[in-house]
Image (cartoon, rainbow, N blue to C red; front, side, top):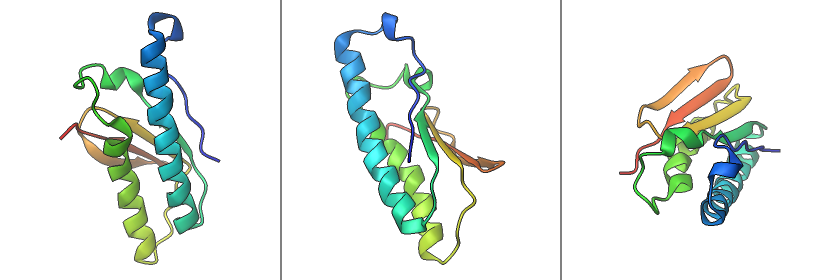
Length: 110
């Protein structure tokens, strides 16, 4: 099952920020569950919250991260089964990168 890690310290966040992060994580978790089912694989999922510090307030982070999951789904639809154990979404806009069974997806707010 997909798992999430909060990277920013909880004490430094407002209740509103924590709830917003929880909502984004729940949305991404649902999207990752679809990817896992489609591909017949299981992997951990996390959001690197520190890397999203400069994003516009109210930006749909899970939607931006889902673009990375879509890349995985495209591979599966072509009959390829990715060797993936971890998906990490960052907010640096760098796109997809693979290393040792982990995919880091640098999302952008655009």
